[in-house]
Amino acid sequence: PEITVQNHGVVGIKNHVQPVVPPEGVPNEVRSTSLSEWDRHLRIKRTFSALAFDKGRLPDDMFASLGAYYYNNRNPPHKVLEEWGRHKGVFVNYWESDCNFIQIPWHLKRRWQGRLRELVEAWAGVDLETTDMYGMREYTKGARLLTHVDRESTHAASLIVNIAQVNVDRPWTIEVLDHADRLHEVVMEPGDIVYYESAKALHGRNTPLQGGNYINLFTHYRPTDDPDWFRKESPEGTPEPLIDVGECRLEGKLDQYSQGAVTCDNKAIGPHLSPTMFTAKNGMDLFNWWQSVGPDEGVGGGEEL
Image (cartoon, rainbow, N blue to C red):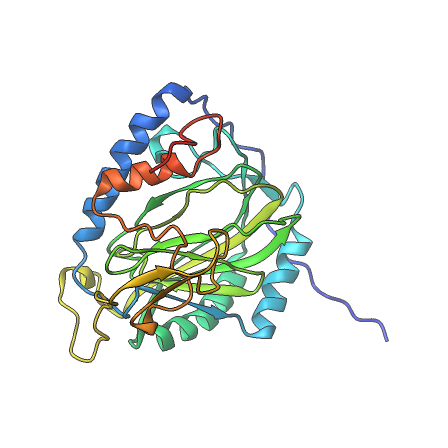
Protein backbone atom coordinates (compact mmCIF):
# COMPACT_ATOMS: atom_id res chain seq x y z
CA PRO A 1 0.00 0.00 0.00
CA GLU A 2 1.09 3.57 -0.62
CA ILE A 3 1.87 5.76 2.37
CA THR A 4 1.78 9.55 2.17
CA VAL A 5 3.79 11.52 4.70
CA GLN A 6 2.62 15.12 5.02
CA ASN A 7 5.37 17.68 4.68
CA HIS A 8 5.02 20.96 6.57
CA GLY A 9 7.57 23.74 6.26
CA VAL A 10 8.26 27.45 6.34
CA VAL A 11 9.76 29.13 3.28
CA GLY A 12 12.31 31.89 3.85
CA ILE A 13 11.87 35.08 1.85
CA LYS A 14 15.58 35.88 1.57
CA ASN A 15 18.88 35.43 3.37
CA HIS A 16 19.95 37.86 6.05
CA VAL A 17 23.16 39.72 5.13
CA GLN A 18 25.67 39.29 7.93
CA PRO A 19 27.80 42.34 8.77
CA VAL A 20 31.56 42.39 8.37
CA VAL A 21 33.32 41.83 11.71
CA PRO A 22 36.91 43.13 12.02
CA PRO A 23 38.79 40.14 13.51
CA GLU A 24 41.13 42.31 15.55
CA GLY A 25 38.21 43.47 17.69
CA VAL A 26 36.81 40.02 18.50
CA PRO A 27 39.09 39.04 21.44
CA ASN A 28 38.22 42.19 23.39
CA GLU A 29 34.53 41.61 22.80
CA VAL A 30 34.82 37.97 23.85
CA ARG A 31 36.70 38.99 26.99
CA SER A 32 34.04 41.52 27.95
CA THR A 33 31.25 39.03 27.24
CA SER A 34 32.93 36.28 29.27
CA LEU A 35 33.21 38.57 32.29
CA SER A 36 29.57 39.59 31.96
CA GLU A 37 28.27 36.04 31.55
CA TRP A 38 30.20 34.90 34.62
CA ASP A 39 28.53 37.61 36.71
CA ARG A 40 25.11 36.73 35.30
CA HIS A 41 25.38 33.07 36.29
CA LEU A 42 26.23 34.03 39.87
CA ARG A 43 22.98 36.01 40.24
CA ILE A 44 20.71 32.96 39.95
CA LYS A 45 19.72 31.61 43.36
CA ARG A 46 17.41 28.69 42.61
CA THR A 47 18.67 25.33 41.36
CA PHE A 48 16.84 22.21 40.19
CA SER A 49 19.39 19.39 40.15
CA ALA A 50 22.64 18.24 41.71
CA LEU A 51 24.85 18.82 38.67
CA ALA A 52 22.85 21.46 36.73
CA PHE A 53 22.56 19.13 33.73
CA ASP A 54 21.97 15.54 32.64
CA LYS A 55 21.89 13.53 29.43
CA GLY A 56 18.90 11.61 28.11
CA ARG A 57 17.24 10.29 25.01
CA LEU A 58 14.19 11.29 22.98
CA PRO A 59 11.26 8.89 22.77
CA ASP A 60 11.38 7.12 19.41
CA ASP A 61 8.25 8.77 18.04
CA MET A 62 9.53 12.24 18.92
CA PHE A 63 12.88 11.56 17.27
CA ALA A 64 11.09 10.33 14.16
CA SER A 65 8.89 13.43 14.00
CA LEU A 66 11.75 15.88 14.50
CA GLY A 67 14.06 14.02 12.16
CA ALA A 68 11.47 13.82 9.39
CA TYR A 69 10.80 17.55 9.61
CA TYR A 70 14.51 18.32 9.34
CA TYR A 71 14.97 15.94 6.42
CA ASN A 72 12.06 17.46 4.49
CA ASN A 73 13.20 21.05 5.09
CA ARG A 74 16.99 20.77 5.17
CA ASN A 75 17.60 22.70 1.95
CA PRO A 76 16.79 26.23 0.71
CA PRO A 77 14.32 27.90 0.57
CA HIS A 78 13.34 26.35 3.91
CA LYS A 79 16.89 26.79 5.24
CA VAL A 80 18.21 30.36 5.51
CA LEU A 81 21.07 32.11 7.28
CA GLU A 82 20.28 32.74 10.94
CA GLU A 83 20.11 36.47 11.64
CA TRP A 84 23.10 37.67 13.61
CA GLY A 85 24.84 41.02 13.91
CA ARG A 86 26.88 43.18 16.24
CA HIS A 87 23.75 44.00 18.26
CA LYS A 88 23.49 40.30 19.17
CA GLY A 89 27.09 39.93 20.30
CA VAL A 90 29.75 37.33 19.55
CA PHE A 91 28.05 34.26 21.00
CA VAL A 92 28.10 32.53 17.60
CA ASN A 93 31.07 33.12 15.25
CA TYR A 94 28.82 33.94 12.31
CA TRP A 95 31.62 35.95 10.65
CA GLU A 96 33.72 32.78 10.28
CA SER A 97 31.16 30.01 9.86
CA ASP A 98 27.63 30.02 8.41
CA CYS A 99 24.92 29.44 10.99
CA ASN A 100 21.69 28.35 9.32
CA PHE A 101 18.12 28.31 10.53
CA ILE A 102 15.11 26.15 9.72
CA GLN A 103 11.88 27.72 11.01
CA ILE A 104 9.22 25.48 12.56
CA PRO A 105 5.45 26.00 12.02
CA TRP A 106 3.51 26.98 15.12
CA HIS A 107 1.34 23.87 15.19
CA LEU A 108 4.41 21.64 15.30
CA LYS A 109 6.06 23.83 17.92
CA ARG A 110 3.05 23.47 20.20
CA ARG A 111 2.97 19.69 19.76
CA TRP A 112 6.68 19.22 20.34
CA GLN A 113 6.87 21.69 23.24
CA GLY A 114 4.18 19.83 25.14
CA ARG A 115 5.87 16.45 24.78
CA LEU A 116 9.32 17.78 25.60
CA ARG A 117 7.97 19.67 28.63
CA GLU A 118 6.94 16.35 30.18
CA LEU A 119 10.53 15.15 29.94
CA VAL A 120 11.96 18.31 31.47
CA GLU A 121 9.37 18.33 34.28
CA ALA A 122 10.37 14.79 35.21
CA TRP A 123 14.02 15.86 35.34
CA ALA A 124 13.51 19.15 37.19
CA GLY A 125 10.91 17.76 39.59
CA VAL A 126 8.54 20.75 39.28
CA ASP A 127 5.61 21.85 37.14
CA LEU A 128 6.80 23.98 34.23
CA GLU A 129 5.36 26.29 31.62
CA THR A 130 6.71 26.68 28.11
CA THR A 131 8.50 29.96 27.36
CA ASP A 132 10.40 29.40 24.12
CA MET A 133 11.44 26.95 21.43
CA TYR A 134 14.34 27.96 19.20
CA GLY A 135 15.61 26.30 16.07
CA MET A 136 16.29 24.29 14.20
CA ARG A 137 19.83 25.71 14.09
CA GLU A 138 22.39 24.19 11.74
CA TYR A 139 26.04 24.74 12.63
CA THR A 140 28.66 24.30 9.90
CA LYS A 141 32.41 23.63 9.78
CA GLY A 142 34.35 25.92 12.09
CA ALA A 143 31.35 26.84 14.26
CA ARG A 144 31.94 27.92 17.84
CA LEU A 145 29.45 28.86 20.57
CA LEU A 146 30.80 31.12 23.30
CA THR A 147 30.21 30.15 26.93
CA HIS A 148 27.10 31.93 28.18
CA VAL A 149 23.90 31.68 30.20
CA ASP A 150 20.35 32.33 28.98
CA ARG A 151 17.59 34.78 29.92
CA GLU A 152 16.79 34.63 33.62
CA SER A 153 13.04 35.16 33.54
CA THR A 154 12.25 32.55 30.87
CA HIS A 155 15.06 29.98 30.68
CA ALA A 156 15.02 28.05 33.95
CA ALA A 157 15.05 24.43 32.83
CA SER A 158 15.91 23.76 29.21
CA LEU A 159 16.65 21.08 26.67
CA ILE A 160 19.15 20.70 23.85
CA VAL A 161 17.97 18.21 21.23
CA ASN A 162 20.42 16.91 18.65
CA ILE A 163 18.35 16.33 15.52
CA ALA A 164 20.98 15.27 13.01
CA GLN A 165 24.68 15.23 12.21
CA VAL A 166 25.85 15.25 8.59
CA ASN A 167 29.44 14.18 7.89
CA VAL A 168 30.50 14.86 11.47
CA ASP A 169 33.31 12.41 12.20
CA ARG A 170 34.73 13.89 15.43
CA PRO A 171 32.69 14.56 18.59
CA TRP A 172 31.62 18.17 19.03
CA THR A 173 30.93 18.31 22.74
CA ILE A 174 28.47 20.53 24.53
CA GLU A 175 30.41 22.14 27.36
CA VAL A 176 28.49 22.64 30.62
CA LEU A 177 29.83 23.96 33.91
CA ASP A 178 28.22 22.35 36.95
CA HIS A 179 27.33 24.04 40.24
CA ALA A 180 31.01 23.99 41.26
CA ASP A 181 32.00 25.41 37.82
CA ARG A 182 33.74 22.19 36.79
CA LEU A 183 33.70 21.67 33.05
CA HIS A 184 31.82 18.70 31.61
CA GLU A 185 32.08 17.85 27.89
CA VAL A 186 29.07 15.85 26.75
CA VAL A 187 29.00 13.89 23.50
CA MET A 188 25.62 13.84 21.77
CA GLU A 189 24.35 11.59 18.99
CA PRO A 190 21.20 12.26 16.94
CA GLY A 191 18.21 11.70 19.20
CA ASP A 192 20.15 12.53 22.36
CA ILE A 193 18.99 15.31 24.69
CA VAL A 194 20.77 17.31 27.36
CA TYR A 195 18.77 18.79 30.21
CA TYR A 196 20.36 21.89 31.69
CA GLU A 197 19.66 24.83 33.98
CA SER A 198 20.30 27.29 31.21
CA ALA A 199 20.14 30.57 33.16
CA LYS A 200 22.41 29.18 35.89
CA ALA A 201 24.80 26.72 34.24
CA LEU A 202 27.35 28.28 31.90
CA HIS A 203 27.39 26.39 28.61
CA GLY A 204 28.87 26.61 25.11
CA ARG A 205 30.81 24.84 22.36
CA ASN A 206 34.13 26.65 22.22
CA THR A 207 36.06 23.97 20.36
CA PRO A 208 35.41 24.48 16.62
CA LEU A 209 33.27 21.98 14.74
CA GLN A 210 35.85 20.13 12.67
CA GLY A 211 33.61 19.38 9.72
CA GLY A 212 30.09 18.62 8.55
CA ASN A 213 26.77 20.02 9.77
CA TYR A 214 25.35 19.74 13.28
CA ILE A 215 21.62 20.40 13.78
CA ASN A 216 20.07 21.24 17.15
CA LEU A 217 16.75 22.34 18.62
CA PHE A 218 16.44 24.25 21.91
CA THR A 219 13.38 24.42 24.13
CA HIS A 220 12.97 26.38 27.37
CA TYR A 221 10.70 26.33 30.41
CA ARG A 222 10.25 27.98 33.82
CA PRO A 223 8.28 27.13 36.97
CA THR A 224 4.57 27.67 36.31
CA ASP A 225 3.33 31.23 36.96
CA ASP A 226 6.68 32.26 38.44
CA PRO A 227 8.64 34.71 36.26
CA ASP A 228 10.73 35.69 39.30
CA TRP A 229 11.81 32.12 40.04
CA PHE A 230 15.50 33.04 39.78
CA ARG A 231 15.33 35.52 42.67
CA LYS A 232 14.18 32.84 45.13
CA GLU A 233 15.99 30.19 47.12
CA SER A 234 15.51 26.57 46.13
CA PRO A 235 12.40 25.07 47.76
CA GLU A 236 12.57 22.23 50.25
CA GLY A 237 13.20 18.90 48.56
CA THR A 238 15.44 20.28 45.81
CA PRO A 239 18.54 18.11 45.33
CA GLU A 240 21.60 19.63 46.97
CA PRO A 241 24.16 20.95 44.48
CA LEU A 242 27.08 18.54 44.15
CA ILE A 243 30.05 20.65 45.21
CA ASP A 244 32.61 18.47 46.97
CA VAL A 245 33.39 15.26 45.08
CA GLY A 246 36.72 14.50 46.75
CA GLU A 247 39.87 13.90 44.74
CA CYS A 248 39.58 13.58 40.95
CA ARG A 249 42.05 11.78 38.66
CA LEU A 250 42.56 11.53 34.92
CA GLU A 251 42.53 7.81 34.14
CA GLY A 252 41.64 7.94 30.44
CA LYS A 253 42.86 9.85 27.41
CA LEU A 254 42.43 13.53 26.65
CA ASP A 255 40.08 12.75 23.74
CA GLN A 256 37.85 10.37 25.70
CA TYR A 257 34.69 12.42 26.18
CA SER A 258 31.62 11.14 28.05
CA GLN A 259 33.49 7.92 28.86
CA GLY A 260 34.50 8.50 32.47
CA ALA A 261 38.06 9.52 31.64
CA VAL A 262 38.10 11.46 34.90
CA THR A 263 37.11 9.62 38.06
CA CYS A 264 36.39 11.21 41.43
CA ASP A 265 35.92 9.84 44.92
CA ASN A 266 32.22 10.68 44.66
CA LYS A 267 30.91 8.73 41.66
CA ALA A 268 27.82 10.92 41.48
CA ILE A 269 29.88 13.30 39.36
CA GLY A 270 29.12 11.04 36.37
CA PRO A 271 31.08 10.21 33.19
CA HIS A 272 31.22 13.63 31.48
CA LEU A 273 33.94 15.56 33.34
CA SER A 274 36.29 17.14 30.83
CA PRO A 275 39.58 15.24 30.46
CA THR A 276 41.24 18.67 30.79
CA MET A 277 39.90 18.80 34.37
CA PHE A 278 39.23 22.49 33.79
CA THR A 279 37.42 24.43 36.52
CA ALA A 280 36.55 28.11 36.08
CA LYS A 281 37.02 30.55 38.92
CA ASN A 282 36.13 33.79 37.14
CA GLY A 283 35.23 35.30 33.79
CA MET A 284 38.84 35.56 32.70
CA ASP A 285 39.09 31.77 33.00
CA LEU A 286 36.22 31.52 30.50
CA PHE A 287 38.05 33.85 28.12
CA ASN A 288 41.28 31.89 28.49
CA TRP A 289 39.40 28.66 27.76
CA TRP A 290 37.99 30.18 24.56
CA GLN A 291 41.51 31.15 23.50
CA SER A 292 43.07 27.80 24.36
CA VAL A 293 40.68 25.57 22.37
CA GLY A 294 40.28 27.78 19.32
CA PRO A 295 41.72 27.06 15.88
CA ASP A 296 45.51 27.15 15.57
CA GLU A 297 45.15 30.01 13.13
CA GLY A 298 42.54 32.73 13.14
CA VAL A 299 40.67 34.57 15.86
CA GLY A 300 41.18 33.43 19.43
CA GLY A 301 42.96 30.13 19.22
CA GLY A 302 45.87 27.97 20.04
CA GLU A 303 47.13 29.45 23.32
CA GLU A 304 47.65 27.06 26.22
CA LEU A 305 45.89 27.57 29.54
